[in-house]
Image (tube, rainbow, N blue to C red; front, top):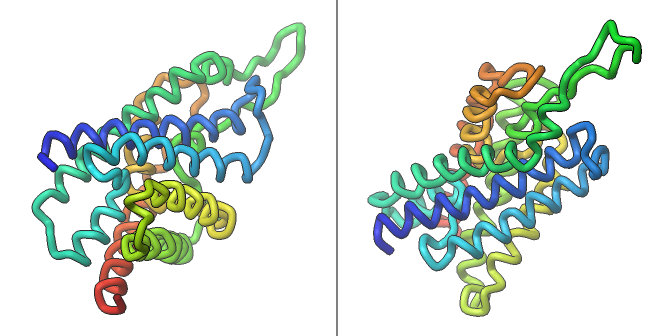
Length: 249
């Protein structure tokens, strides 16, 4: 695979991933969405389908990593580092594009996120905080616990992905991506409660940058004080998964 193919493939695939993922978060979170308050199960499956669509689309060009933690785990296992920067750069660019597309898709809902007070209609509900549409927010803010959660959840992602490569026929049949997407749904349902399961530095940091600059009414904070956790945790988890896989398999 050429650097150009990898870069373009990761941009397109990650953009699709984030469009679906941020899109389902917007659908469940924002006022005036038909899917409002439809719940965590919907979010978990939305992200899983995002992985499915993004990875299948990117696979012919780049292999469809879509995640720096996956790229790092593969590099730690194989010792091949030359193209890591191309993958990671494409993933971050794609994540920002996907976040912007999700914003445009729900533009009217974001614009309606305005507090109206002192009118003849009375005081409307408080504006909906919007960061959770784009990036993760811990349910209990404890940096050590949050970091540990992200490390464990990312090992739970990357180690099986590496092991799937040993399962004869998965790659050839094209079902490997389907299995990975179901794995992401399972991680969301089982391990996503504490932090919102970033398990992907690009998935969290790229959209957080976009949230910072988008002109969303009453958007609230972008919470940069927490932003290091969903970046460092998945990278540590990806590296651990690569080491474990290399040693055990």
